[in-house]
Image (cartoon, rainbow, N blue to C red; front, side, top):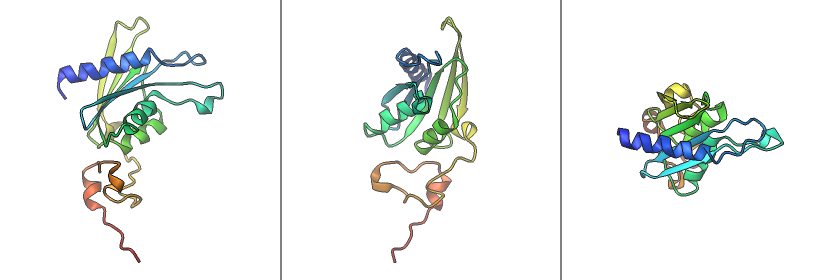
Length: 163
């Protein structure tokens, strides 16, 4: 991914963060995903008084992309103070990404003029991720909804014979 596209991904996540609904934690987070089709989608965290119903920015962004036809994610940016995705978000991101998908964690200070970008790969964010292809839960391309990801797992998967 070139520098211009990386900056656009980060700026999209920053704008998404401004839309966060977080009256309880006051911890706004924004996320943006770049799909395999080179489209950008974003999400912000949406809290609820019943805390378990809160949804994180990363899952909102992924759901936004998938419900609009995205087959896979080629890059992800997450913006906030100490932006580290929760375990559920990491697994959802992994489902639509390859092990080499860039994940940009953009830490913004309170004044939001200063940012630190940590560049990681999906395999670093969630090593040993649960892989539905490796587990035999999905054929290599189920109903053409999700592009097979992860390199070796897609090659190892064998179709089950119908009995």
